Every structure is written in C-alpha cells, then in structure tokens.
Length: 598
Image (cartoon, rainbow, N blue to C red; front, side):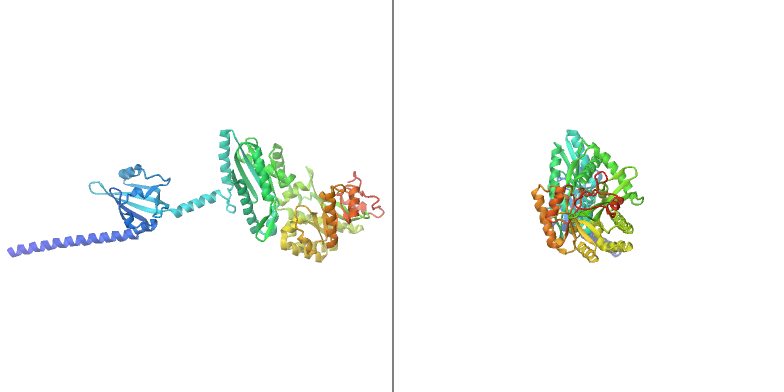
C-alpha cells in the first residue's frame, strides 16, 4: 500500500513539474513570438513604463529616428515628442488616455540629428488585473510623405502649374481678403490686368513649347518686379493679374504698371531665340471701380482692352465708358464670326504712284467691315479681335481671294495691269502650305505672279525664323513680290535683308510726317533710300500728304509713294475711272482724287 501511495505521489510531482515546464516553454514561445512580431512591424513601437519612461523600442522606430536603443532607454516619452505647433504634449493627452485608454493625434518627433518629422501617434494604456497602468504602448507612423503630398496637392490647387503664380481661384481668394481688409481700414486696393500683345504669333511661329518658356520668363519678371508688395497670378493663356493691397493712392498702381511695361518690353532669351514683347495693362481700384472681386476683374480687363486698342505697350485706369465698350466688344465678337459668311467685308483700294510721273503703278487692298446696323467698323477695332478669336487666317484668305478676283475683273475690263498689294498676317504667312495656296489663287485667275505683292511687318519676319526664310525664297522664286511694311519701327535687326528675297520696303509714315522740316526724319529716310539702292530693293514711302513731302522724297531718290496727297482709299469703280484711257495723270496733277470724291 505504501509503495502504491509513494508511486502516486511521485507521479503527481512529475506531472506538476511537466506542467510548469510546459507553461514556461509556452511563455517563452509567446515572448519570442511577441518579440519577433514587434521587430517585424513596419510602424515604430515604443513600450514605456508607468512613469512614461522608455522600456523597449522596435527596429522600425530606430530607423525612423536614428537613436540607438541605449540612447532611448529610460528617456521620458514626453521628451521626444511635441504637438504639431511645437508645444509639449499637454496633460490633457494623458487625461484622455487615463479615462478612455487610448489617444490618437498628429505630433512632431525628434530625430537624433536634431531634425523633426510629422508622425501619427497612437498611445494605449496597458493595465493589470487591478486596473493600474503598468505600461504604455505607442504605435508610430511617419507621415512625412503623406504630408508632403498633401502640401503638394494644396499648392497645385492654388497655383498655375506652368508658372507657379497663383491660379484664378487662389488669386480671387486673396483679392477677397484684401478687399475685406481695405473695407475695414477704409483703405484702397487695386487689380492690375496684364495681357501680352501678339503672343499668339509666338505660339504660331515658334511652337507652343517656346511660348510656354516665354510665359515662364514673363511670370519671373512680374514676380521679381512685384517682390513682397502684392500677389501675382496667371488666370489663363497670356493673361496675368496683380493684386496690390494696402494702397494709399492710385499713383502706386500707376508706378508699378509703368515698371512692368518697361521690364516686359526688354528682349527675352528663349532657347536659341531672342523674342521681343510688349504688354497692355488695365487697372481697377477698390472701392472706386467696384466693391467685389468679379466686378473689379471685369473692369480691369476692360481697361486693359482700352490700352490695347488705343496704343499697346501702355496702361489705362478703368472708366465707366470702358464697360460700355466691353459690352460692345462682346457683341462684336459674336457678329464678327458671321461677317465672313454674310459678305459684310469689302475691299477698298489706295493707289501707289510712280513719284516721278504721278502714274498709278499699284493699289493696296484695304479691308473694311460694313456692319448692317453699326455701319463702317475700322480695322483697328476688329482685326485684334479676329486675331484673338483665331479668325485672322480666314479673313486673310478672303482678302487675298477678293483682291485677286478684282485684278481678274479689271483685266477683263481692259484696264492697264496693276500690281496688287495685300497685307498678310504672320499667322498665315508662317504656315507650311502658304506658298501652294498663293500659287493656286494666281493660277485659278491666270494672273502673273509679278502682279502680286504681299506685305508683312518686319516684326513678323523676325518672329517666324527659318520657316519664314523658306517662304520668302519660295515666293521670290515664283515671282511674287514681298514688301516689308512699317519699315524702321520697333525692331533694330535688319539681318533678313541679306536674304535677297525682299523686293520692296515701305517707309513708315511716322518718318514721312516730319518732312521736310525735321532734319532727323530726313536723314533717316535718306539712309533708308541708300540702303535700298545698295540692296536693289524698291522703296515705297507711305503717308505722303503734302507737295513738300513729295518733292523731298523725289529728290532723295524715292521711287514710289502712297498717301492722301494722291488719293485716299477708294471703291473699285473710282480706280476704274482713274485708269480709263484719256484720264490725265502726271506730276502736274498730283492729286488723283479730289478730297470730296475720296
């Protein structure tokens, strides 16, 4: 019996020992699993004791901060972190953990090198069976990338992607703030609207990539000139805006606009090109010109258009008259699209005479728009609009077709053959199929190429580059004459004259107007005429209004002339009368058409 009890007791002890060993093995496995799990977690983990001192950290946290385990152990948790605004973790954080067992929030954490980064922090309290806190466990996510992406998206939502300036929404938001402040302080603010003159020609001539680079450089100049004194924005295309707040007078807006015109008129180096620009600027002031942002922007736009229409490379302050003009333009833009289809355009012709004899040798086709309700609309009013609406090429094509048809009709009527001069925009001249279109027009009406003269400004030639050179040579080979219009204005480079593909130079009327009294104008014209003789180019003087101007130019060697002294632009029927056999022409009768007839 004793041996049986002893055996049972021994077995019980063995079982107890086995259970103890099993429990220890299981506990060790749990600890190993927990340790491996802690090491493998991608998030940083800190285990702190009840006094908030670091007792254990995982490898992810070491990688995040650069601290060694030894450097972290024993540090108070609060010494490593602060709120996003830099203030220490407040007691309220720990009060929430005490009451709810957990707290989650965004904080900044310190690295060993002294830098900091944003992190999403979750702290939980671990309690014993009696409910006392034994440990705190913090799980940490580095949210630097997410914050940077958030900031990038916020920036993109508020800024123009090409130039980095404020976009329309952000600009208007800043304007609202400035107006509220100005209204509160009884101050003044201004919106400056900037539009680049003839920017479309840059895109058409040099590609949109060059145009985009130019816009970036324009934005840089605007931003540099503005400095910290306002907000610059790009609201679309080649339109820029500037907000000036806390102004004391309109003169401050005037001074800035003058400086902007100056810096934007300096040449831009873009790739292999040197591009010249100008700008038109409109200004609207709060509260005089409007009390809300949409009204102020609209009125600044109207003032800009007035500057562009009247002069270009200028600025204007808004006036109520401009709003009526703006409404007229909007209506006109819609009507311009119908003008071609409904035959509202017409050509008139201004004679060019041989100055020695007074004989008509050419006519220039000039476009007129006879609106059914508004009457005659001047080209200076609708041509810029046609360029902006993308209609200028269609209008150019219509003008050239109508002019060639007129030559054909005059030939059928038995009139002496004349040279026909037609102005062509850079938009069409720079197209790859331009020469083929000209050839087709002439062939269809059996017109000799030598009877057509295409006029293009020197600025357009300089903008169009290599494509222009190919076009010029092709036209020259065909026999079509090319004239440089408004010669001597705005551009100083004359390298294109070396191409030997220019047939005529039209001396701008701004040089002729001062003759014969202005010695500077006289010297410039004589130099131009000498240049023409050396390069075998025929000169044509524009804007001749007096017999004194006629005699000066004739003595200086000018071959042909055009101006009100001889005739204003007239209807085709008047040209027929002038060319009818028996009509006396010559320098004894300079005026071909009496003032009342023209």
